[in-house]
Image (cartoon, rainbow, N blue to C red; front, side, top):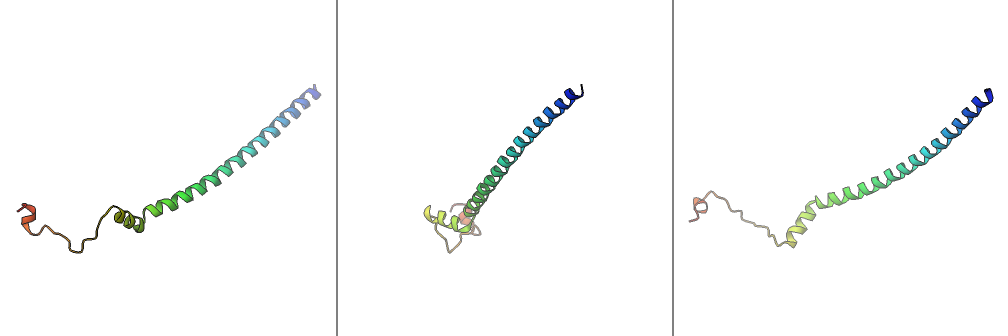
Length: 84
């Protein structure tokens, strides 16, 4: 009876050992995925900062034909408001 109990403990211990090895491999896989996602996230943050920059806005404005007006048009004169 004691041998049977010891065999059950040994088999259980081997099972736990194998499952802990598998969990360790899963942890390594997830850590590699986290590093990869961090790298992708960093690249995307750089891209977003470029699209959020004034240089990009200026280049897009120039490519779309926007011009810089030196004399602003105000609606202080009522003829613009009344279309006269």
